[in-house]
Amino acid sequence: MTTLISPQTRGVFIIAATPFTDAGEVDYESIDTLTDFYLSFGIDGLTILGIMGEAQKLSAEESLAVMRRYLARVAGRIPVIVGVTAPAYDPMVSLARASMQEGAAGVMIAPPANVKTDEQFFNFFSGACRALGPEVPVCLQDYPAVTGAWMSVPVFERIVRELPQVVMLKAEDCPGLTKISRIRALEAKGLRRSAILVGNNGLFYPLELARGADGPMTGVAYPEMLTEVYRAMQAGNRDLADDIFEIYLPLVRYETQAGVSLAWRKEILRRRKAIRSAKVRAPGAQLNADEHDDLTRMMARIDSKLAALKRA
Image 1 (cartoon, rainbow, N blue to C red):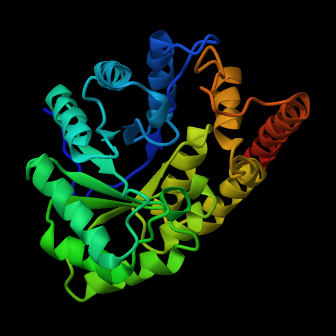
Image 2 (image 1 turned 120 degrees about the horizontal axis):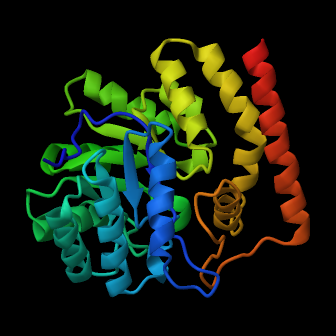
């Protein structure tokens, strides 16, 4: 039986890439190997068809096929959230309902760029919830750097109070630490709890956990960093969490560069034999020779620093 996302959901959720062949076709066999790769590091959940999954570059038929392949490979072992963001409610609802029928744990929705005020923000999600129906749990993606739509804390408070199926926030505002703290403070005064999973490419990960986030939801190509930092924080060992995170920080920082992050992550996944090709569908960056050299050096330094940490 599928475990649906809820306000109590916690743990490490990976945003999955969508693998392509060198010719640009969906590589379904690499979806299988990539899923196995993610699961091997003890992740708690998977999110597919997000921005990192190049959902906007897939046809409706491809989106359905990718969703079904991931859910079939996961086979109920962990919850899977499906990104269903669309320019209109009808395609959103169509993909959401198909995903829930296949065993998804919930859906993730980001607001459109024309949402500019609190009232518009609330009305968009109110309409989305009505269209989906109350049985579909929703993760609200707050990523203004990409969507162009900024969410205030008061409008999120209203959403939580009036839209009970919004059970999770994917927090990607930047700076966003104070927003997390303000939401948790409202909950301490009686606001219904929301699960908060954080993105921002993992750039502020331990700090966000310390502010009350329930885990990450990002596509870092080293899932073991996410799980090991999370476990250290859960055990109360903040210094170890910071030590592990800081080993990966140069790579995380590099990945944060707009336009190159997906190509960078896909090449890491290819080198780690999780996928067969690092292809990013056009329009999208491909790494040049200098960037390959950067990556080779960074990956080698991660290995050597991890070895030193284990010896310490």
